[in-house]
Image (cartoon, rainbow, N blue to C red; front, side, top):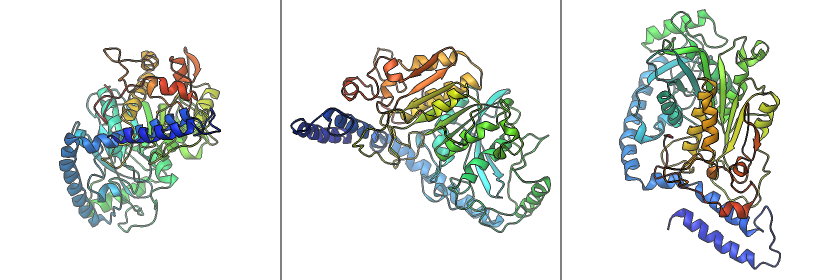
Length: 483
């Protein structure tokens, strides 16, 4: 019996007992058998991707070879970096398979690896994707914390490259393939600058540095924030002495249209891009915000993967897409009480108040890990990555690429069905939360709160109705890109 069936059977038994309890009542907790049944369904969905990975021979075979390849490469890089005093303590370097993402698609594209210094002096690692051609809009992706690696988000890079973007993925200091410690510029001695890795500066100011690097050209080479040309010269001199490779120019600079940029981030990275989007040249906030350091960027849109910030300190400047999970963090856990159905609309309200287009969606049964890919250890739904992929790509198409038809494609996606009219489409509202409202406020389309109800499904909070609504699977593939 599959785990989902076991959980469903257990809760069915619980619901049967509740039906005969003397004080059974309809409500938003386990005293309502319909809510208990709904919560069991949510929890069971939250481990489907993990179950699929464990039971797929293809996945296991791909992991075996890719994990060995990347781990051996990582060990060689660490040994080589010791000559320059570089220390790597991130799990992406230390654990076999820690820097793989989806092992089946690791070699699907060949990006250019980049290594550049952060303002702390730590050597950061990243990739430039789609560095061929000309006049491509750009996207920079910031990872999540708790040892998130750029590889976990390559699903987005692959999709965006296929749609004509140049993309930069990168590891924050102390995570993935990036160095753990800081250095004075020109000094090989490690110091505590930027340690520990999970601190706002590595993500917020780190994103600013990543944007500076992405915008660099031979005529305007990269200088990390708060650093000077003299600092850069000192770093270059020391690197030449130790034989260390450092990049000072985006190798894909000639392919990138430097007037069109989108940014996305996950978790703490989502908090970072929520703040950094205010440095867009679309508004004047960059002139006074300390984070922007007196520099603007051609940011046209922002995406927060669990979640876009909407509270104090966030100043919406560009259209924002807010993608969230169904309340589960690293592991799915039963929720004896239903949450406030409106509590995922903070970003929606903030962006709407600023007069900007916004779209907020919550993945049914989703965990905080829907946007990350790492073999076997991170539970998530079958459909979350595909759902995120679909709306993320269209959001950038609309506001970074400037394609107005993308808005209608997003609206159409809410009620999309398969070729035979089936529901096996990962991004329709059958896969939106029934505990939290999803919504949009879009020019020309107005404002809609509760996209499930607007699409003809039961409204959020109707447990019996949501249990009766048909929900399609996401197809046989447990992860991967929308197509």
